Image 1: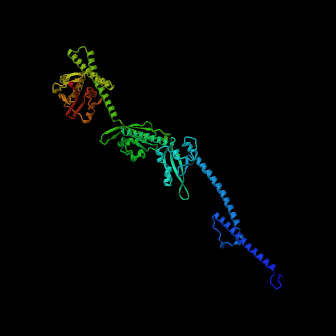
Image 2 (image 1 turned 120 degrees about the vertical axis):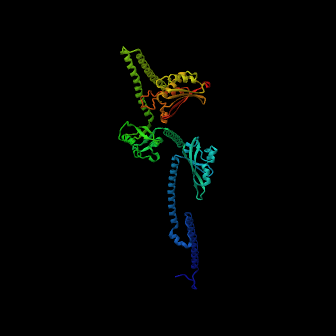
Image 3 (image 1 turned 45 degrees about the vertical axis):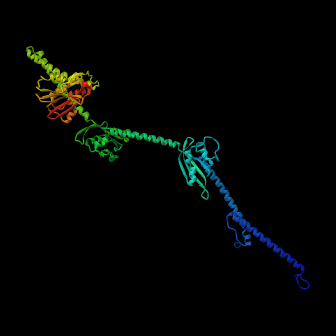
Length: 568
């Protein structure tokens, strides 16, 4: 029962208690409001720190805020954040160690510069490759440390990167006696501004040296190839090289022209697939079957219709094994050699005949003189004259052989030159043939008559005797032989003309060769084929020249030039 006053209203004590309680309640409310505001403010501060939006009053009531325990949640969140930060720091530290290890282990010299070109950091390779001293260069200007020439300053990669904001590079940067390829890589901040420039210096000194050596080697190879190509082009012999499968790998121009094959079209093609010459195919097939020392002469009909003889020789190229060996086939033009051999054979046959005939006469008539006692004086003189004539033929043959042997041995011709009348020399030469049994008619055509030549008398007489002897041999009995002298271009031209069988152009071109006879089949015509060869050597020894003007069936004229006495 509540205490009341006498008039039935609440007592004063009760009113005081109520007032006290009301005041306490108001104070508690104020304290709660301040506490909630404090908690909400601190919670919002934590949320803002974490990057989360603040809590609005309508989103969460005060008493719900206590039940939710945001401080506990934020605390747990911070614990997780701190744990993540710790783990992140550990990973960053590990990454930093890895970067540092790469930074130091990389083969290039690496510099990190700020935008003002100050050195922030560098690895040990910078000290090894770029720096001369052992002091630290951190904080120094890169330009003062490395760029020691105006060219290096103008080609600064750092400047290029700062200007473009992109990776830049420069080749053959020279520093400390070495050469580097420089690559610059920018590092940007969140606003895209360049905060650092990483420069990597890749040492290319050895690479450049190797490249220089390689270029030099390539030049040598190119020079050698040019020399080989020049050699191949200049070769008159045909050359064909094949690999171990008999495919064409090389062919010179002479072989292309001879075989009618284009190297460009036949390169890499089996040789037997493009060779149509039957004898050459037989030669190559014999080589392919393993025969060694396969040599043979092959006849080729040339574009002008002439037949030429080529000697085929195939040899193995060096290889690791026999199966890997290629082949090289050389086609050597032996037409000249075979012709010389033929002429030599004919000469031996002719010389044997020429020697045998007078020797038989000498021996026969000598036997008659020895065995017969009743030979008359006239017969004895006739026999002795025949023996003497045949002995002179033998002497001429031997003399020609000795002369040509001496000339071919390189001894040359020793001349004793003096001034002589060309007319007198020609008359002297003719006089030795005037009364011969052939009945030839000799004429002198001197224009002018007073030409004097500076010559060796014996040599000129030998020249004229050979020419007159040939004119008599190759012209009919009783024919006309004309010896002429002319002034021609500051020299004396002495010519011998006959009306004999003449020569073709081909025969005339070979007339001065050793052992050559225009009509070798006619052994009735005496001679060794050496007379005109000796004539040419003797005339050339005087500084003159020999020429032939001949037509078949109309005769031959041989011109020899000698120096004038007045011109010496």
